[in-house]
Length: 406
Image (cartoon, rainbow, N blue to C red; front, top):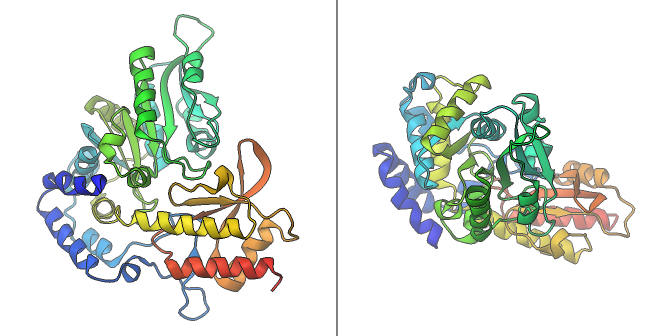
């Protein structure tokens, strides 16, 4: 695979400890994938593990990941003296073909620092999708904390893309006192609420040309699940994101790290983002203990995302056969599956979720809506490294039995 073949070349710069991590990865590959990737959650019902599909953030760090944290050289990162944080930032920047990186505690802070950095002038505006994570799930922080106005455009419900002509017509110069000046376009890859949809390189490149060549503004990618996108497209992150000025990379969504994101971009952009991180309270001291787990996640847990994608497709196919309503005609790109109850059923979403948890040890989340069918109550399943094939089988068995009234 193109993407997988690129990873060792990127790792050449990360130093002696990376070689030890690679050796650990080789040992892991010799053991059963299921036994190394499953995280065991106690249900109070003996040794049976909970099947937790609520999110791909619920996974626990593996023993090897924790051992990397214990062995990591550390220092004061606010003073620029934590070698493991620096290693992670350089590795991520290399992986995405950017000049520099910045380690932050959360994806929300990473996106906010990106907005602050790109919009460091006063009276600025960003263009975002109305169903995007930045718009829906980050507390309105760009406006509330940064004083940055947002112009929301509805994404296409199938492709999750913003219409380029609409972006073009929405752009505002600073030559009219009535308008905030447009400084940035933000896109999300993969797109969460629209179903883990992958934005292809061709679209990112086209949006980048529009932003840079026509409008003279920047393009930021909320890449919380960007590694899923790269895996699904079988391309390298650097190729996929070449048209973007900055990318936010989450280490805890699907990759198994307990926390953290890395923001990558040009050196001056990262300098301004580092200043923004301080204003957000995101400067951490001996952060190498968690940065080491994030580095391990990037170096060892990317390839296995393909397993999550296969299990998500299998889950979606079976749910469709049971009569559940799936958007995009059941198409699943990555690890997220959205589905609504069959038209003829007496059970509610909340009852289904509660009974799955109580009777089958399966956790799943409902209450999602999508553009175009806001009255539909969707359930989301996020396959992850804590759920194996048996977990998918138990999920489907539980759903089938509950629907059948058993």
